[in-house]
Image 1 (cartoon, rainbow, N blue to C red):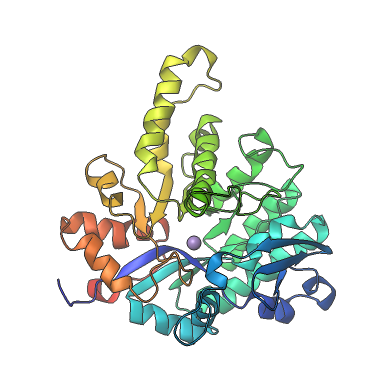
Image 2 (cartoon, rainbow, N blue to C red):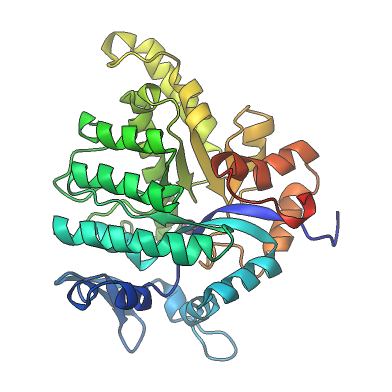
Length: 377
Ligand code: MN
């Protein structure tokens, strides 16, 4: 295997150039209200503007650390994200990534928008653009996440149906909902789960989209960088717990959930923990489930990891099969620039069946419309 290109599909990557896209596809008065980031000249802080509101956040230290050429790491990251579809596919070919799920970047702040009519318009126009200009033009190697206007449940249901009609295969929902909306374990969302199940729409949750005023920095002082990074993963685990314990996934056995960038080894752990609660606290548990929580979790929740050396063992040692690899392109936590090294380190010594499942098979199960990578052709 050494030296040979190892292809993989990725369950986690991000869009670039969203501001330009919004200017092109949205009416001018709406485009101006979409999220945008303005960095201070010294690069220490940025101001994020969303629909007349703004907040300032300190950029990670990376922003001021420079390489030999004097460029900050933030500069390097924003430069390396491909500006066009052609460039992006060239990056994927070079890295050995065949197909990938593409989440928003700045668009992750869309959940701060509070105008139901605007959110509805944005979702509709953006989803049409993603289907025709990204999914179709990439030959379906890119699997973009559609937007859902969550502020009105009828709008949300209608847009999932529309997104499916135009050819999208998954929608993105934040792990933390905008203030004032019912939590994801509430029956309020039942029509949305039904719409996704009926249309075969995968529900994608990207970690770190918990919202709230704290932003990504919750801890300061010793250990802060690691504390804050690890903290972002818990939102995905909470979503999975909510959707299972509330019976949502039990009532919708064909509904599939993707939790991106949160690793995979938490799944066996969480399954055991939920089973223990279900059995030992059975007298308090509502609603009853038709199967143990862990069985539902293993069946309907899919996960991605990028570097985790112990993730493959979640499959072969703990029986969880719905994990896939993810590049997190073009982010700095991701594997861009060293994807082949990472893939070889993770998979060269594995049973070929396990390797194939994690690199390619799981993704194909979730997105059967995607073609085979070259080595399988
Ligand atoms: Mn990511």
